[in-house]
Length: 451
View 1 (cartoon, one colour):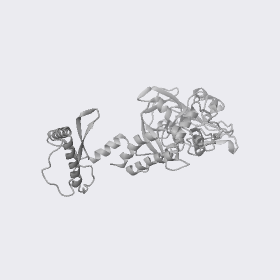
View 2 (cartoon, one colour):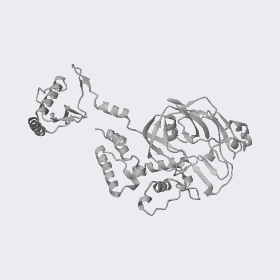
View 3 (spheres, rainbow, N blue to C red):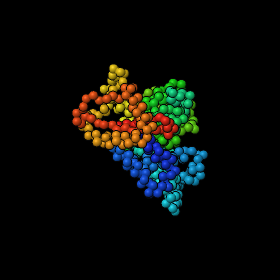
View 4 (cartoon, helix red, strand yellow):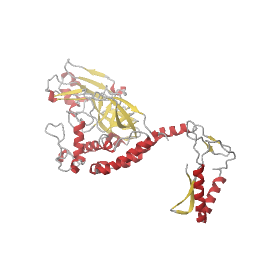
């Protein structure tokens, strides 16, 4: 069978079983237990002929632990929220405080492990907002009290399949990203259909990094005060879209500048909603400027799009290096081929292109081989199985009678027929069979063929 199909089956079933509630139990596993789990992964690698992520990788590198921690930090009602002193930031506000652990079991538990992962994956910016920030080039730079803002507007986002579940989010208009991204939680609120995919991302910090994501289609947005919808191209989900809320332009931002006073009433106050959307240049209609208001050389300018007004720029103030934080959204995305039910069916259909219907109405298909193999001689094995079956017939007359009736039914229905000619050597394969009874149907036998 195709290794892609086997790998898809492993990811959808076995891997889901292995990683069920993994954040709760994996850190407490002994080395012996972890080796036993890893043997399952190695056996799957041998069968699928594909390199698969290890259990340790599933727990850490694939962000199972970090993903859970990020949701906790976002939820003020969670008992582990920073306000309850578990995920606490250091005075610098850049990293989380480690928990003292005198035992290995506590040190490897969920919260200390999550904090270590945050330290590994965060940069000098705020740890929570740097969790998914993989670049260093800045769309807008916060220079102390300079009031830096960017192309960020409040929008209503919904799915055409569930238009009644419209959600208010902030959208980042990014002319340097090749694709559109949407927050995972926003998709769950809208009930949008998701399709798992693998993405190859290229950013300033790394090239061709492979990440797991989901594709969502049929999304649309409209401006905060507009009734005109813009259909978005297929977007990809992310657990977090990095953005400083201080970079969101508001009506107060416009009032600070004389040349922007005229649009102050058209820009809303700061909304109580998350940043849930990043619109790339694959949606040119949303980014197209309809009107631009400029000021002096060092003053910010305003851009009006179909989604509303935004202000880009900052005051010409000089800040210390320690006060400057930057966010980059320059992302080049390439979607890798993924295994979906449609692709699996297509692969199976390619193996059975010569299916046809005979005169009796039965479907006939060739063996699923690109080139017909030279079959080994298994007649001796088949005769051995036949002799075992005969001995069982002699010991159990009822089994003999049920077996005979079942086989007669197969020949009567045309599911099997007697071979009239002797095949050539290498073109014959004997199929042994055996009879089994279902525990709930003791009087009904089923003959199983060892194909």
